[in-house]
Image (tube, rainbow, N blue to C red; front, side, top):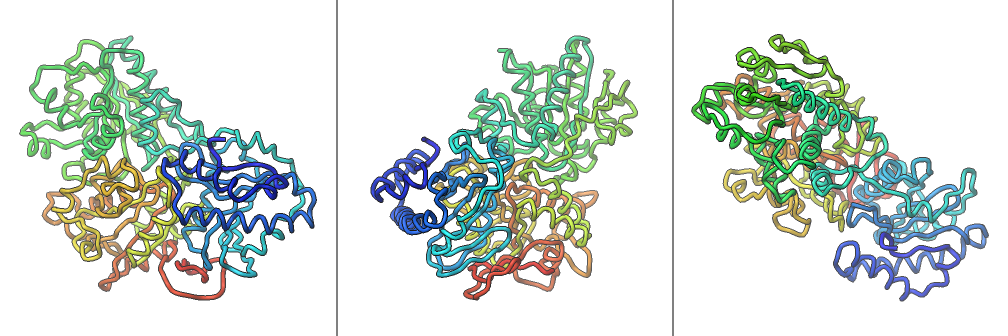
Length: 635
């Protein structure tokens, strides 16, 4: 009973007293989020009780079989503290998901919240893979209304008994079996890291086994064993689209290699300082995850000291510093790839270096040499290296003694955005200026309930996120933007130097929504440098004037002082990072200024306009005109 507030057949519910009902829900709320429910929450439950006590007897008058249907109130989705559909009605062969709002008008975030319940139960609940769901948004202050919008039904209370009057035409659902079925949501990187190092198995999610993370880890374990047994030097390169689980592969590999050995065996290194800080904050340890630059300062260059770890995992290896940048920052004219292979070459025993390769995310100075640096390092190494990589980069490694092609090391599907495979393709098309192709991708993305919105009102974006994830302790939303956008501070997006100095990146990602340091406080943004490799459920991407659309093409500015070989590409990569952080979707905020065509380009690419307005009367399929948020999309 811990994961729900009240359950039982309809016939039992109509006999329960309001005091008994409310007390049951109060106790459940305390178990879920460790706080007593607010006055408004209790009033909402009382409204639900009164509506159902009126509507369910009317249902029984026209459908006697409904007496045995099962009601479930406040069913908590396991591992997702605070996410609880208001009412589930298990009606023979289908389940009605009812979300109640004490309002006269539906709002877009409420519709998306309800659609997300359907998506997550369908994908991650073992008892729901073949279940038909009927999502209902019940507006308690509406009268005599029943409309369809965006795949859900919006009703007033007096319509409830009619909409529930259905006849089964499929297999009857076993209520107890359904309630007790396993629910395994797709973990965020931070949640996954906790699960790994708390020795819990990662959730086996519908479709997730075919996405390649486990296969990649298993192949790397085999390579590590071969290196040890044969005394060989191996370099394995894992490629992947943004959000495909590369970092997760590295963390899981460290865990598997380290868990049965008390001496250091493997270490996960990253040049992404914020990622390191967030993971160290999450794991409450600095042993397994370390900063790559500090590691090379200790063991690289002319140092003769060797690290205890014989297996080194380098996250975002395509971003390794080239010789020029390493000389400038560390005073040693050795590229990071050369440094890593030199450490391996000094060992008499076998060793394995693993490079995790993100595609198109070089955003720092000195990172533009890409994968070619690794072949250059092999050519200059005193050891003979065996390279393992996907076929698409095999041609780069002409100086390895052997190249083993392994497609298990190529992660092609994003895990970040709830199995939506086209988000990264949409981003690529948008940033290439191919707006028609982006629009085509957006249709499938929308059908998979991944939300892409655009607005010119930052307050509308904030309110959407706050209300959609109200009371969801484990959901994260926040402001993200380019570090070089100079026009955002006037709109309350404080990415200036002094504001960013106050940002605590570990708490920003990890603290509960009530904390002022949490991303959910919407006080301070993170930039591409701080959010790369990490994720939010609903990022608010604040578009700056350093990359804008004008006369049918993208133009960059603001990075001239960088010694970059290709400033435009670095800026474009920055926005690729920002646009690929979301799990449920993203809201793009484009400031209402200037003559740039950025806003129109994003709309043309398929994003839906999200903005506030006061009143209208008709609910449409693409224009929710009874909402406080209107969502429009040109057809």
